[in-house]
Length: 303
Length: 250
Picture (cartoon, rainbow over the protein chains, first blue to last red):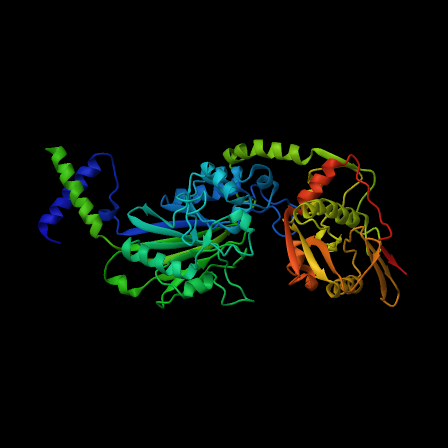
């Protein structure tokens, strides 16, 4: 570093520190820590399961999720909360209030971004649109074309969030709606091949937008044993590059632990899905170092 | 002077940040189960409470009355509850079908496993239809050839379950599994096509009802089975249901 620049930076640090204790991570800290929390297929499960439930007795519940989320946010303020779709349908809360309470609770939990699942069309695309004012978070979907629908301009392909100087790009992918959802419900929503879109998205986010972290919120499903070539999170992961994390949904897959997958550039990345009904919360922590010689050593993934 | 220095410094920082890149060195990942170890945050319970109270009141509101227990296991290859559901779905869907196509549905068939609860004697509330039919199944009308109807009857006889059939059916099953079938008081004609009401779940191969696959024609009512049940119950002061002569075992 040349001496002149060093002096400028030192002066800047001194001034800024003196005007209100602002931290200057880019000068003082060479490490960054981002925490990603996530849910999927919560299906209107506002309250915990009954204690008599045959499978998830006394598990889940939004008010408990809040305790956990707030605890983690206290550990690391640089935390994002994401959802991979199918927020709607599953309890009478949805039948009676159309998703109003689900969105209000997610807003209170300070969700950052969600994608759209097939069941989010259950009250038709207008039903979803009607509830948007209750959602203080963004919806992303890169492969649903909403141009001729009420959702036009309300759902973006991706969102970029800055946390502690780390640029995070989050894009969404939805499942083919034909034969899964009544066309009367999704109207003129067009489904576009998710693999091609994901390849484009990851390039845009990594190369054009220069994101440090690329996350895909997917409602494609984890993997289809009976139809192994069908597009799924595992197939998506293998056939793309520059995606660091795929947060999945749709198949209600209760993974014993997150899956490490080798992508098309022969780099390890993560696929995670946390079952359904808000029974689990996914947590992924990303640790960054300011670029140095270590760069070539790659990333360690611990699951 | 101090102000000028600050502005100047911020520019430097901005340039400095612009050039800074970070590399991902470590990722840790975990799945955390949410159970009673986590307290419920009061603010969230407070937001939920008015919705919950309204929902409970709505669910518990009385919509009809059952003079006796109505269940799915009180008959032989039929039941009072199965008959009630098959008949009400037939009646309500037939109105829609007739209005849109000018034709009539011949009969309805559903599956025993699709009835998820009984109706207990006493007040019938909004909760009952949700318990009976928790699934989001829609009613569909399937046009089947006589041959497929024979497959349907074979399935019914072999299966030995009380799969709900509507009152349009009179099926006499002999001990050797041969049978006589009347549909709407007419002898079954294997050369005829029939319009059969069922759920989209069964039509798409649910419960191995393969005879519903690739039908001659398919008509979607866009009417949920549960909505048909709710609409019917709300229209009746008293639910009358019984086992009758639609299926007779010799």
